[in-house]
Image 1 (cartoon, rainbow, N blue to C red):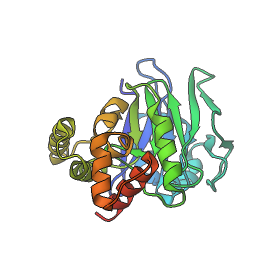
Image 2: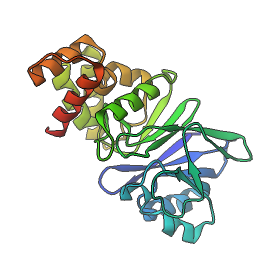
Image 3: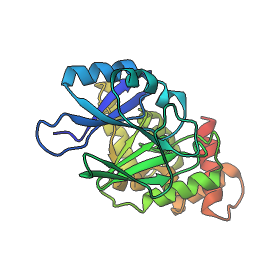
Length: 259
């Protein structure tokens, strides 16, 4: 049984349906970041799934726009960041809170990851990170409300999770992200291999997520701001020496924003 089911929405969003029971044939799921209700309701019906909760990482409309319509069909709790305006929020969450589902059999730890928005959170359970728009496959979220320093430290905190953690991000941005990453590290052989695989997947309209944290550490420039090749690329782009990893991240993020 696949633990997570991707539901495509809009042009490039993924809404995740997470099985909260390990038993074969289990129908109980949590809905993650439902920006659009229609494809979620269709998938629930098609697969005969029963939602137990809605999990929200941040307040952007493409992550919360379907919440109220889903609640017209299912009476389930909504969990989300305490410091953001989330529709129909029942359980406001802060750092290190625990979300307990399936009578405590499935638990997620809340990790505050400001940067993309000021109150963004991620949900972690061993083997799985639901990270919204903080880490993307090969990239990271734009800084709409937070600072480069905040996002850098958010990514650093997530990078301490086990390497086999699967990264369930909310957008299919991988190809563009890796194209940019190759500009930063053109000699990175692992990145070259990943980009070739990603091109094949997208040519066949296949998802490129989840990815593993280990792969991200090898190929995602925003998790590699301490690596000499990334530092050198950032300094060449900036035309000056950079004194910290935060400065490297700031340059790389601004560079990506202009591509």
